[in-house]
Structure formats: structure tokens, C-alpha cells
Amino acid sequence: MQTQAEGSLKRVFRDNALKATPQRLDVLKLLMTSGEHLDAEEIYKRLLKKKKNVSRATIYRTLEVLVEYDFVRKLDFADGRMRYEQNQNPDEHHDHMVCQVCGKVFEFFNPQIEALQEAIAQEINFQMLSHTMHIYGICSACGDSADPVA
Amino acid sequence: MQTQAEGSLKRVFRDNALKATPQRLDVLKLLMTSGEHLDAEEIYKRLLKKKKNVSRATIYRTLEVLVEYDFVRKLDFADGRMRYEQNQNPDEHHDHMVCQVCGKVFEFFNPQIEALQEAIAQEINFQMLSHTMHIYGICSACGDSADPVA
DNA sequence: AAATTACATGAGACTCATTATCATTTGCAG
DNA sequence: CTGCAAATGATAATGAGTCTCATGTAATTT
Image (cartoon, rainbow over all chains, first blue to last red; front, top):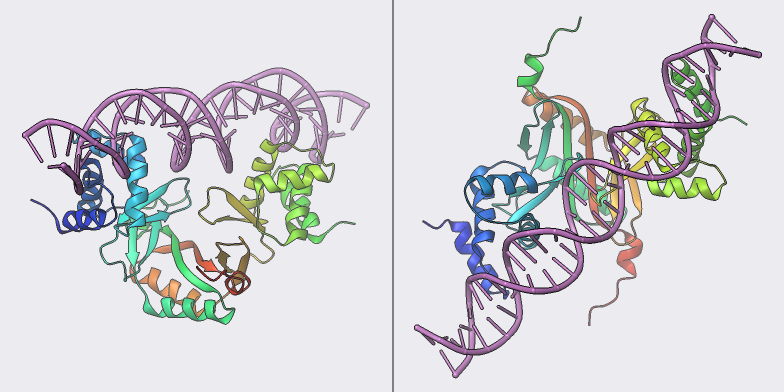
């Protein structure tokens, strides 16, 4: 079986004199199927567990090209390491809520905020290339189980 | 001369069994008066130039406590090192536009976005503790002087 | 299908921001 | 003025990420 993304990767890479190696396909497939926001080390460990042989250096290099060709998005949750998520629809942007207790990430999209960002940038003639919005706090599950403070 | 923030620091620290050392006052004063978004290394270099003796380790430790006691805000512009800015009014939040050409940082505040963030978090019962919004791109100065591509 | 070759990989050295260790110093309460 | 908990400085350690270089391998060419 070959996923849609894999076919697309082979096409895009061929058009750019890049090679569709098993390592690249493994990383891409993992991100596509997991739906999570994984860091490089986690990707490395999961591929090892699946008996895929790949080195850390290749993980980093692969993520770089996957980001460059818009297969994957690189995220910074301000905790010292980058996360990566699939980028199914490059036109559609979404933002993140990060639970600081359990680490779970919730995605959301708000067209009004997107529009306001555009307007703010234009006000000072700032050419917006990308933007990020993160909400940090405590998710409902973690909030409910909170221990009553003594 | 003693700035308001310095007086406040001495008070807050005394109330928490922390010491108001010259190094801490130097770091705080630098951030208060510069108005810039400085990283630890830059703070270290500027204090050395002013003949203040301080070590890198102390810079990092000091920034940690200044953040903890809300004198200073820690910012992550996703380029591998943290920046720090004064936090004059902890109730008032502002966001950042970062020029990826010259590195300049522009601040902005938009109450509508703030309100929307609150609403989004409440929708899924997420208790928002903090949030960040960064717009990355090219500032007007850098955009104007763009070299016409060959 | 074998040869070719430019691109990719693996292993490990390296960088650089940040944190930890520990002996020494110092703010400040009594 | 003294005692001591907290802070500092020097430096080692950590950890994410990058670089190097010898070797391997997609994919094109013959």
C-alpha cells in the first residue's frame, strides 16, 4: 500500500532532483499516520522500535527537507525542542493550545484572528510570511483532576 | 538614583527571602532602560562593557528569578535562544512582529484578538495561563530596500 | 541489466545555549 | 558585628541540533 502523501513525495522529489529514500518515506509515513506533534528524538525512537534503521542525523535532515517542501510543519512550543506535524492542507493554517500538565496539544482555527493578524501587519507595512499563536495552560481533563490545595 | 523597579525588586525580594544583589539590580536596570528584546549573551556582554562584574551563570539564574517574579518576560522567537524584555505592566499583554531580515522586533496589542483567544479556550474548558503570538516576515524598511531580483 | 554519479546515509565529532556542581563570598536579620 | 542561608563565579555537564566524511544507493544512462 502506498499513501497519497508518499506518491506526492516521490513526484515532488523527482521534480527537484531529490531521492525518495526509505528513510524519508518512513519519517513521512509516521507523521502522517500518528497525527501527533512529535519531536525528532521521539520520531527516532519510534522508527527504531519498528525496526526501521535510520540515524538521528537523517531524521533531522529529512525533517528539514519535508518542511522545505511543505509536507510537514515545524512547531516551537518554547520548551527547548522542535515538534513536527503533518501539513495536509498547506493553505489552511491552524494554531495550538498546549496543556502544560499533560503536554497534549489541541488544534484550532479562527478566521477572525487570521484576518486581524493580516490587518495589523498591513498597518505598519509589514510583509507577513508566517505566524504562530500558542495558548498555554491546563486542559479540561487535567483541570478536573486537580488536587484540592491544602 | 534608584528606579522604581529597583525599589520594587528590593521589596518583593525581601518579602520572599531573596537577596537584592548588585548583579540582579544590574540585569534588571539594563532591561528596564534598554527597551529592547535581549538574549542572555547580549546582556552579559553589555554588563561587561559597563565594567560590571557578573558571570554568565548568574545572568541565567537572575533572569530566571526576574521572570518568576514578573519583572521580566521570556520570549521565544524560534531562533535557538531566548530573549528577555521588561514587564512594566504585567496585566497588559502585547505580541510581537519579528523581521526575519534585520531582526527588529515590533510590538502590538489587539484587544479583539485577546478576547477571541479567551473565547476559544473557554469553548473546550481550557484554562489559559499565557499565550504568545508572533508574526514573522519582512519589515517595511527591509522590504523597501529589497534588491530587484536579476 | 550493469555502469555511472550525484545525492543520501550513518557514525560520531562538534557547536552552542543553557543548566548543574561546588567551593567561596556576601546580603541581611538578629 | 556575627552567623548563615542564599548568591556568585568558574567550570563541567547536558542536550538539541549541525557538520564531516567515508560509504551506500536511487535513479538515470548506455
